[in-house]
Length: 597
Image (cartoon, rainbow, N blue to C red; front, side, top):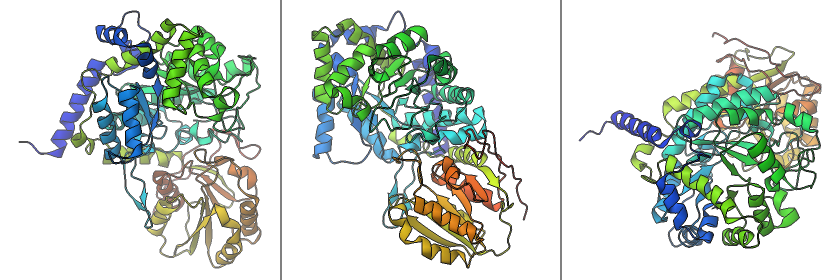
């Protein structure tokens, strides 16, 4: 019996490739969506479903990828979703790779029909499938590959890297049992105050966002996973978080055509399999003051009719205040289906949402035929992905596909090429002081266990006199006077900010106490080097800082890349895909060559 891991890996990849080709790995090429004739399997299944079972196929709950025991309330609830409610799929969230895959296999095994699993894989499969950190030692438990955020890809200007991210996301994601990536973000982030998109976007240039987005879509869908462009018709020019309230984008249709809609047109032309809606109002498209998720003018007239999209339309999470505040959960579900939504994602209550979809048919809000069109898209997706034949993944092969060292190298390349030196008026980069006493100050939220770890470890490899300090933003002001004193005995002071990145921030602004601290360092001649691992627009609050480096994200791969760039171990070649008004224009960035030692 052959036991060579490399042989197993090659065999697994060949089998996966053959399966993808048979199942239609590229949704655009395979005719997966909107076909005039469907398979006998799809027709047979659709004909066998009751009205309520049809409704359940398009209601997808949220599930964590964590371990839970079989008699826990969480597992009993999942069992009910699958066996009693008969939902058609789930959105999967964080967990270790093996637990995610095992959990999805278990859910598939208890379901009569194959389930579809989707996840927000904006930064690779590791954006959801990582082991996290073990406390109190902050031991990195590893996982799938995490790429820098999309804006880092935009900073490289390299569509090949965008394609590679899509390719590896699909390979690792499908090995975990995930079929749909809720990525790429096609929003054009032209508003520096945007608290929810920010670095999740490729940038502020619609043509750049279109090029990078389409490259990612092709990389993903060429390798067996469905891409989802989001958030249609555009979430970039907002200053409000749609998780908490209803954003309103008051721009003209002409502006929408020239900016927000450009990447979505390109994605549709490029064959994107799914598009996610925006929980926000655009009066230029619908003056009734309802969010796009609930607007037939946006989803049916514009997206389906004018733009010709034939794939799956999935709602953004239905438990967000952007849709709940006006109508409540049940009415929002009915309005969503009436508007053209195919999948109601992450409802507040699964059973009540299914009942609401059924009630919409019986009340004459929409026809059963309208519901059937969405159910058919879901079932056809399952058939085209080969789930009617094999819905489980091989847990033994997972270790040789997820987190592979060659995949890690691609993520490192992206991170290194993305590092952007926006400003270096004193020519401090690369660091070139032999035996320098360097003070590295990390400013981050207390729960951010990863902040500074990889960055300082890489710095320490070349700077034996490195001193590190961690300052929790929750009580940072209490420590600033002590740190100013500590900087007096340092040759170089590096201030790394993890504040204001879009995944957990309610605001992109840094506290005044922080900006006062950095200004004090500058005024006392400490020449602070500021590294932005969070909000890249931080320079607007620190215009007097002499050296400003943007790393785009706080994942370990970006931390290591930033440290290597500061040390001169790697070249610096990134350029801003955004402007930082009025201090830096789009395209700005100082290049630095590798410093030979």
